[in-house]
Length: 92
Image (cartoon, rainbow, N blue to C red; front, side):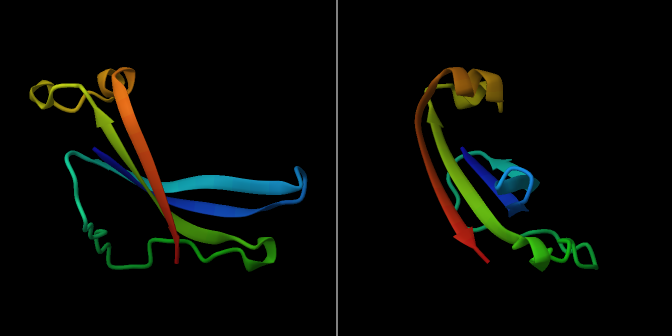
């Protein structure tokens, strides 16, 4: 299965690091090479806070488990039987 996430990262002066916020995510069974976000008729993403160096990026995580597909989408069972994970990030 694939976990597709849209993430915000911006500077955090208090911790001298970054604050990471998950803005949107979806789980897709099987494999995919294309996803289309819904058109809600208006801008969905907030305006990036450039004063804090905020940037948005996609994260795509592929998960392979030994869980049977006949059981339906059961994330708890899939994570318990996790065999492989790979992650790709892309800025935009």
